[in-house]
Amino acid sequence: MKAVIQRIAIALPQRRLTNDDLADSNWTAAKIEAKTGIAERRVAGDNETATDLAVAAAEKLFAAEKLFAAEKLFAAKKLSADGACQRSEIDFVLLCTQSPTTPLPTMACVVQHRLGLTTDCGALDINLGCSGYVYALGLAKGLIETGQANRVLLLTADTYTKYLPHDDLSVRTLFGDGATASLIAAKDFDIRSDADHIGPFVYGTDGSGAEHLCVDSASRLTMNGPEVFAFTLKVVPKLVEELLTKSQTTPDEIDWFVFHQANRYMLEHLRDKLKLAPERFVIAMRDWGNTVSSTIPMALAELQGAGQLKSGQRLMLVGFGVGLSWGATLATWSPS
Image (cartoon, rainbow, N blue to C red):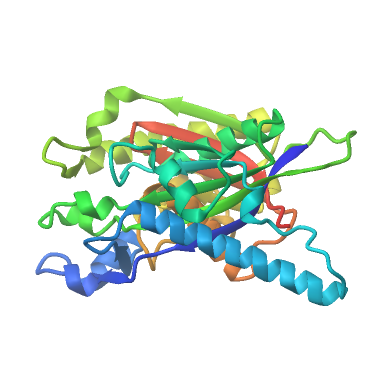
């Protein structure tokens, strides 16, 4: 059995914060978009939590699965729901967040209950940000390929805007709130094939840079932009090269490069430094901003929605940022 990514759904708050809302005498709306690649970002309501967004994303995932099952029933004209995922089939919840609704209980436990999942379902929070989706995929793969789970509901949800100072445009222009739900499932492949559909992985951590992107004692997010930028340009190219070497893969064999959507300026510098083809390098944050652990699955969902993500395509997923933490993996898109 191999772990595969089968579905992704996203949930966004209704409230919008546009560049016109943020513009001042130094930063026009056009300048903000040119620099960040962001036209607007979504902001959680005063009483809207990361838990609420995670539940909403999961509900969209289940709704899509029901639709998928209904389409198969109609096409086959028989009572069969092969390939559909019901709530009762989820046997583990992984929830990546750095803005938990409460310090305890574990947010994944609350989500399990609100979604009506079975009580023999495992549930675990992961406190990680920009690299969180890659790390969570590694955990989901481990659970599935060691026989501990068959279907993992991987959730990402953050409400960073609740930490942002109103007078700091360096962060208010970047971050938005949102959540995603990914179905990571076990799939039976020919026993003669040893090809992974998720993996291999490369990870890294440098806690000495923790202060460069953190929430202080006053619950305000602070970011040393130049230090984060320098860290990214130093670490990410090496990370990509290490993953290519480990997987014995060349850039020409990758259909889509999907990096953490930090901001346009940073991504374009990375793309140029790595000499990656622009048409295969994804920049997808214009309508929701930097959503931390959700940026990679949101970019995949946008590709899927545009009809550009095809079954069997190879993806390079690269996360980097708060921690300081980084991770990268390859994945083959395998919708059910």
